[in-house]
Length: 77
Image (cartoon, rainbow, N blue to C red; front, side):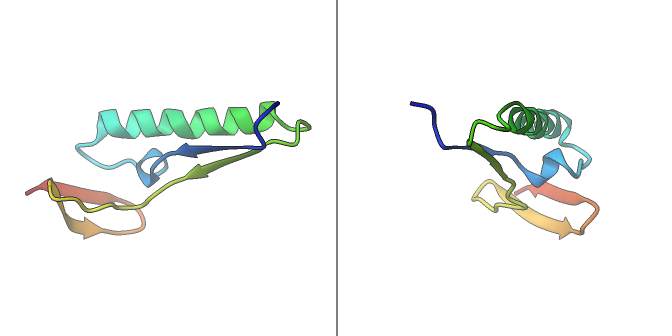
């Protein structure tokens, strides 16, 4: 039996690159591209393809110094 939905975990960094995050941004852009391609491949199969793109998730290892709609700047704390 085929799944009814696929949910991929991306990031806003895949859509809005930021300085200092080239590797992370590249991998999240790849998730975004994969999601878009899979969505088009599964048209007609009654399988929903979605992507969750968190904006900024603060953890104990990072602190937010600046955020705008065009860029995201994180610093190590």
